[in-house]
Image (cartoon, rainbow, N blue to C red; front, top):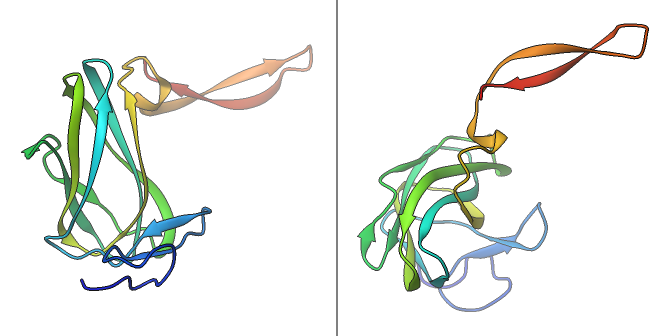
Length: 153
């Protein structure tokens, strides 16, 4: 769209507003719009892409690198509000080293984007495992039960 709907931060055609998580977020995205960033991949590896999104409806985006779709459809579920944030991830994406142009392409829906965090994929991290139950733990001699999350390893 023409102009900055949020009328903050800068005056070009990227819609920006004040974010409830601090700073600013991209807002008012529409299908067929995109955001482009130059990134430098310092090491060839598999990476996770974690996006902070908020919306009152669902949406779909994809991540492209040098014009190639690297994520497939990334679904964004309704979060209950334009400032109710959740992290949406696409994991284990192979990247080669070097400077690249990354594009976040809006396929459908309307949503806000706060940030995109790219981290090296770590299959042994707890975030890659689903909670499958709870295990009681006892402390001291009193056997007070405290329920701690147990993850599937």
